[in-house]
Image (cartoon, rainbow, N blue to C red; front, side, top):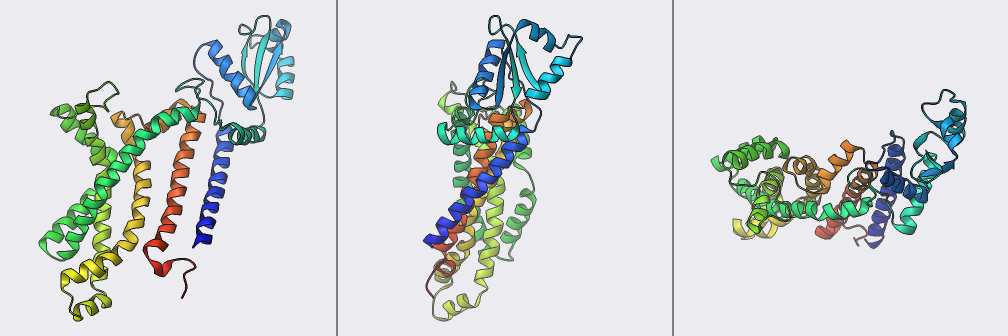
Length: 366
């Protein structure tokens, strides 16, 4: 089992490295996005890019600048400069007194190895070009990540027990009116996406009735408003999970209750309640407990649009903002967070099967 655990962790790291490397290379092939802000801010940003090895800086004279200018009639020198040094990304003759600063991009693979070196030696994942100019992408993600994690963890804590209890109730009342009502309701509501649900709930409870905040409360809001602000996102994120757990638990428990070993337990003198608690529920939970991790990842991905609609300052809304503004460094780190969490959850999911059910434990003695 120990050997299997280390093997799965190693494969997860290799997979993450391949995914992030391909993502970095593909994003660097996208059209270049200029940083926003004043000319000194742009120059400061490009100085950082030069230090990181992503771009090259050239300082030319006034005569050379005239030949490189877009207004120049003779573009021979400009074409020769770009052919030798790469496409010109940015030019300025006011930042450095008496000199013209020309910025060109280095080859993609050169940037890739510079990116690896910066992460390994300095844990530097680049800086923002739009959301917070010249601020590290890791710092921006670190400000938003706790909010997303908190909302998603609370939704799992709320949805797991409620969904499992409804599934157990439906299974114990199999083929009765109660079971039909629960199953039909689950089939209807499980098809409603969380962002569609929150739109209708905001319209009713926020704008029409005024019971809940119309947007996610900020840091200066009262404690009451902050608590009320959790109601809509928690309910909308938990709604689909409750339906999924209910349907899954009902199906697993119904299958276990019709098995031969449960019938044998009843013939040995156990009551129906004892057989369900001691045998049926324990065996039904084997595939359900590991699915909680997979459900957490599904909620984490589905919260992107919901965070954007409700104004929650999490990494889901940040992903959408970075994508729209072409802030590639922040977008890349955001994608890296989702990739890493997904892979780690997959590792924990595989390992948990062995601890929950000894029969499938890798390396167990026969």
